Length: 127
Image (cartoon, one colour):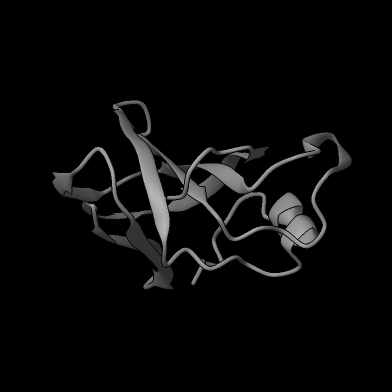
C-alpha cells in the first residue's frame, strides 16, 4: 500500500500502471537529515514495471529512493545487511505512516513523501 500524500507519483504510475507491491524488498540504506527533518530510504524490488523506460535495457530489479519530509517520529529497531523486508505505508490523520518489518525494522510518521529515484538495475543472484 502507498500513501496518497506522494508529492510526485507520475513516473511511478506511468511505468507500473499502479503502485507496486513492497512486501518483499531489500533495504539498502536509511539516512536521516536534520534539515526538514527528513529521511531517505533506499531499497531494491524484483517487482518489475510493465512499461519500463527504453534506456533501462537489461534489468531484473528496480532500485527506489524515497524521501520522507517533516519526519515527526522514527524508530529503527533492527538493520541487517542482508534479507528481505515488507514496507507498508498509509495515510492517517493527515500524516504518512510507514512500517518496515523483516531484516530491517523501522517505523516513522511524517507530513509528506516524494520519490527521489527509480532505476532499473541488473542484479546478480536473487534477493
